[in-house]
View 1 (cartoon, one colour):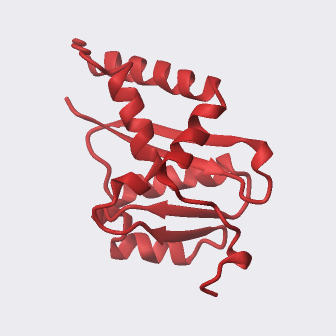
View 2 (tube, one colour; view 1 turned 120 degrees about the horizontal axis):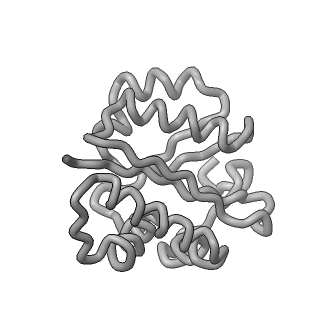
Length: 153
């Protein structure tokens, strides 16, 4: 059996002292557009009506016609696209790397639940140290800037 993980690291650009927030979802099988929309509905609840700018890679389900149509109806969500072939700019890639090097390294579980349990332990480890999620962003070299301060507007 196969499982897929979706994760989002949230940073409050106007108040960085609020700390990083991690949204995480694990499901059997693969994510498609409908599954990702379900995750985004959970993100909406998680952020309790705050505006969210989501920076996504080029996965086809992220940019499908159905996804773009759904996002167009969301007043709380703005999508930005990472450049192609630039995983080093994606802080969530560092989250996956941390999980794979620690909790999932050499895991030979008999059931999908074994991987889910190990992943949950890793998420707890990462969120227990507020510096770790911030380090994922810092490592990318990107800065978070509120939309009204961006130079390209």
